[in-house]
Image (cartoon, rainbow, N blue to C red; front, side, top):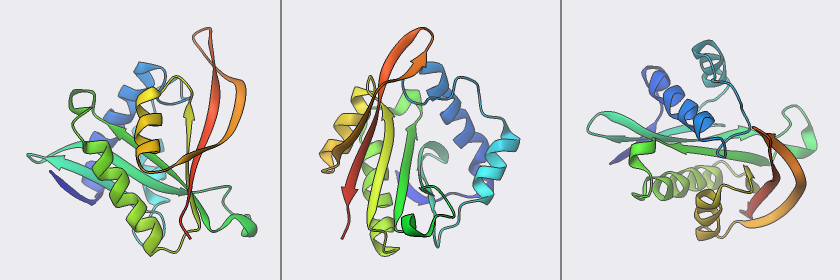
Length: 164
């Protein structure tokens, strides 16, 4: 497995992996697939020198990705904080890919001098909670009964890690 900076040519795979998460109904609060046009706009708002996107590649196929994104962009007092997102192709989960991606994206966040890195997730996403806790993320906030998907109600969780 190779972890590298995402390229424009990876966007179809990145988007397909994300849309698998939409289908599983606990890995994202999006209820509809993300279009390629939206994914291109998202990609253009990231750069390796401030908000990198990493991909995990096995046999020339993108099997997962992770990104850093600004938190409440434009608010100066929040500049030192970034949100991490990560998604793994359904057929490659529980193979250590999430751990490799998260480890690498944390290293990027440290090199970029961010103070805090956090993830926002749905309480039912137990795999993601285990992964974050493996890397010493702590539960920072709970928005109780905040997420409704297909008639099911879940808490919205913020898990964070102080980097400095």
